[in-house]
Length: 343
Image (cartoon, rainbow, N blue to C red; front, side):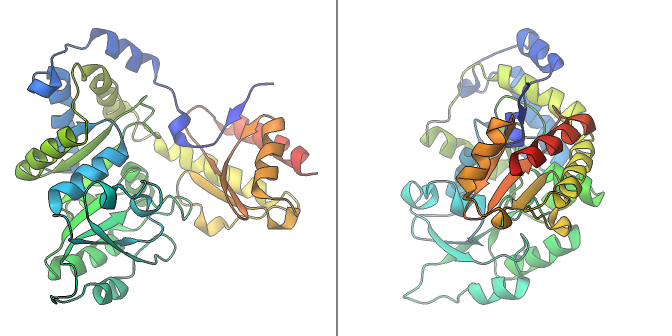
């Protein structure tokens, strides 16, 4: 029995063309700014997102951290969603490494409300940290891959701009959002000072993320990357995969979205499991298992025994994420296995 690994789109492997590109890419020392393949990828990323410059990092976490360190000084405040990846999953690095003060506010179906953001931005006061950065996330991981429309994105960015804040977008899956709404990723990027996107998720690269922004911002972020140990040498082997990803892997994300919808509709028919179809906007499916009378760990283990790998969202949810390795037939096979596991 072959395993169907739907834990995350981070489970994707590089394509044959990516592997070939790694072996033929011209290389140099990136710490000396001498790797031509890195230069090519960074220029492609900047042009694609409509920004002046880009910086290759090992991970999305590192790119987010470098952005915050470049935008704000220790003791300054970052307004962000309490369920955002930056706040929830990144080990408190903005505080422990950057000395930055998070001001978390709730999101609603993965989006911040402009009025709530406005209320969170406190005026200058001797007792308060200075509000400096507004962080956004699109698509939104913990809401199940929900994607904010360009109109909603512009509305919340307008509030940050009016208050003089820098705006950073955690766009790990920004191309999923762009495909979902039929717009360019650059349209989202135009509203923010910096944006991070991952190569290692639906775009199928083995590792790497890119940070884009103005030349001055990227120069400062580059220094911060070195500060946190992110200097690289012959990084063209990473960049080569990223070039293929940007050329070939973006439009096919629509297939992942269609497969997620197919998966969600099938789950809805399985007794003791529930899914909110309205929440399935991109490539994630959050499944409510409360009706099964089992813990999240027990459900994940049952699925593992039938060869379906899921990630846990305790206390009552599991998450499945579609990606390029599994087509409609695989989704149907997974649904049959899940039904067997839950009987």
